[in-house]
Length: 299
Image 1 (cartoon, rainbow, N blue to C red):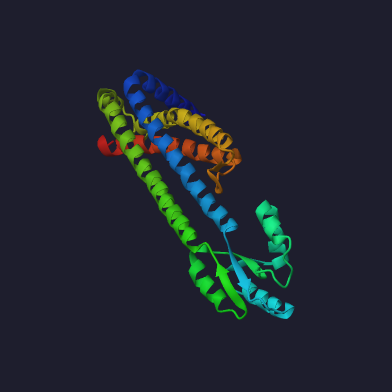
Image 2: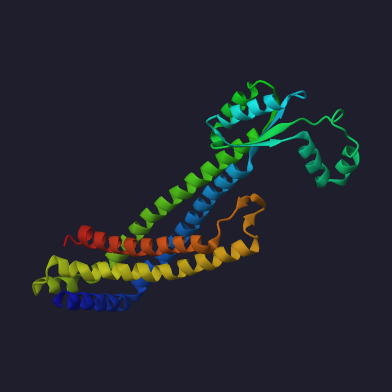
């Protein structure tokens, strides 16, 4: 019971301290709000870049055309060879008749031109649509496919894939780097703002020590104060991130410019981000207060 009473008293004292030192508290809260908002945006960006990479992996495929004269046995042999390749995820056979029908459905001009084509005079070829497990190995996989007997042409999007994957990797690294840097900056700012608060209360601390207060009992109110500052500083960033992401998702129809850049569904993704920001604000606030007390006052 005594421990619980002490805890509630420390929480009460921490709230009083926040109110008494309102200007410095507002400075700390402002720092936390701004940095956590940027951290949240960076987290959203990094997770969506991961999703862009996954969607690209799902949608990008290699089209393998076979020689014009192939038997059913040879088609099956090529398919077996493709399916046994390490980097191949899925193989779908597409006959020239299927390809012809798809093209005719796409455009009226194709329908007009291709409607009279027979199996003998069609320039189309049987082929396979191949999806890969790892797009970073697309060049090696294409070379292996080209060496398969009865394969005529391999049509790929190698250059586009490399550019997209390279861009995604850079953006992802920058986003994670920003998150780490901003966490460090947030801790530094909180330490310094709370250091000013503590310095203005040196007399109060000296009196506490003179009456026999232990180091622990002096530290606890400051740590709780940091937790309160972190919690208050999280409220606006969490609200902005949740509302802003829902608005962006609905406004753009769940994608940015193209289906490849598909945004993560806000439910429950944005609430995970909000939870992470909330936990980060509280932990950083407590850590900043503790470091300020321990390092700068040598308590």
